[in-house]
Length: 167
View (cartoon, rainbow, N blue to C red):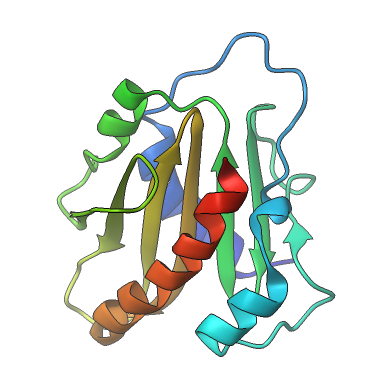
């Protein structure tokens, strides 16, 4: 269905997910699509939507009830509602040397970039991840290894528009 899902979610988001704990008492699944202001994301990224607006992929993926994933305009938005300062700190520690982390100030309560830093060509995942209360939001774009810095700069304003919706 979505050719980006297996690589992107299977590699980059998995680095973060391994560090999160399961929240007790969470009955309703969050909806990552509610984080997206489609017009603003399109304006900020210049990416066109190839579908019918933000599209949830929760039915395609079997995540716990506290997680949701939505795709829009070549970006992947992931929302988890079980974040704690401790689990967020663990998520900053990549499980492989191929991933690099860079802290970001002034975005949510805490934030960082995470990217696949292998120098050889090919598609690489670049994420911006932030915590707002008990919510952890990851916004991912895939790019070539020589465009990582450009994508990091593009993701920051998208994350800034998303942080108010994550509260």
